Image (cartoon, rainbow over all chains, first blue to last red):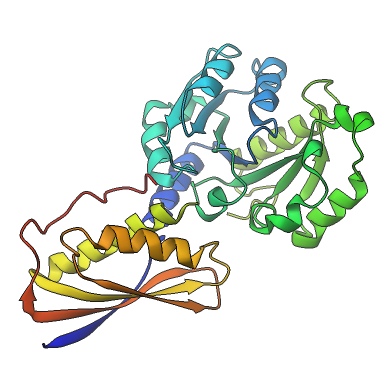
Length: 231
Length: 99
């Protein structure tokens, strides 16, 4: 047997990262702020976006790409709150969106007519963290019902975040949660992320979220990002 | 959980290499797995064993080596020039990470 060895040294994620860079070039060229929303299932991504569309849909031009393992339920819910495009990506078992899916999804979107592109990733605090989608800002949601220790259990999802949204804070009176400890755990894995407390149900904290979106849009339109997007 | 996606990406890399080396039989695939790559090594091994049991990779074995860092990388391949790849080689079925 004449076995020979060839060195390859190729990163397995290289192709995804090339596609993500292509997405980033396209949204940057169009002056669009692209956000990737990551969380566990049920943390409130879709409810947050429903309220955001209701409150700011008249002034912010938003397109949304939803990712789910099965069903277009989230896209259907969001489409009821906007006349703009909501693209559903059904991953058929896939536990995350990837840059190829986003590349294909934005083919149907007129980026020049947008302010914001929001990628609502598959609910999962592990796998989406490994896949660059071409976003400029990564937003990790953690609902207060999930407990204080999720940032420590799933550090990469929090370590990569530009913004951490602590959601469902209207439920705090019913929970034995130490909100300060939760925020300290976010800080332990990511000292630089901005942290906001929000409730899409009561509206508390939503103005700060909208302020973040407004600054992201201004940053995308300007020569330099004003929020320190890490990608 | 996403190890099958990663395994399919590995196969895409291998297909590219085998298209260069024509019908040569792949014997060994060596990968470096970053300790911060969010990869469960046993799970990735399972997925790769399953995928590499199919043409054009049939018979190839997998070596996974933990290394420092965040990258998952195909380090090197071992090829047997005296054996040819099975009929049906050419693949093309690993076009995207669909998990």
